[in-house]
Image (cartoon, helix red, strand yellow):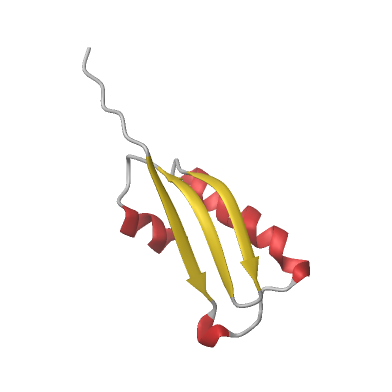
Length: 75
């Protein structure tokens, strides 16, 4: 039986608009959870998220069903 296997890990970095410090401690956990939900809906997995006031880093296990550009656009 034929099968197709793929494993693509992506390190994605987003900055806030104009590098404004808007990612505060009171929204940080909810933001990470929200992004994780978006990735789950796309059949991807958020392995780790880290952020400071003006940017966020994501380590994502990328799904085979979408392109990297589609994934980043949805997030």
